[in-house]
Image (tube, rainbow, N blue to C red; front, side, top):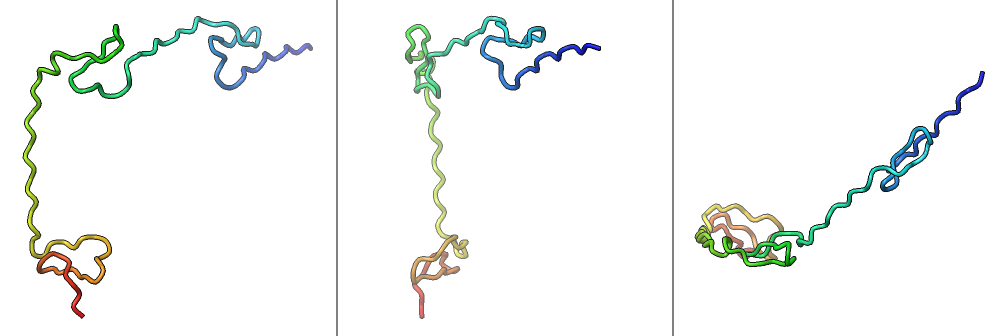
Length: 112
């Protein structure tokens, strides 16, 4: 009783570039043509304000629509509230020689 030879085990891992595994020969053979991606020349990240990328000249150019847009008015800042009596004590170590006064809501000099 003759035993058939086992086919060569396929190696683990990624095959070599442009090659495929052939079960009959037990080796990698030239496969389909490798398609390479065309790398974009556009820089990564957000474009400069009022500009857009031009693939032909490979540089940033002025964008007519972006530069014509009027920026929205800035929102007014909320005014800081004055220290209210009973304000919460700040976290962390107190300043040297001071204690927290809940009535004024601030650090006061130690009285000893």
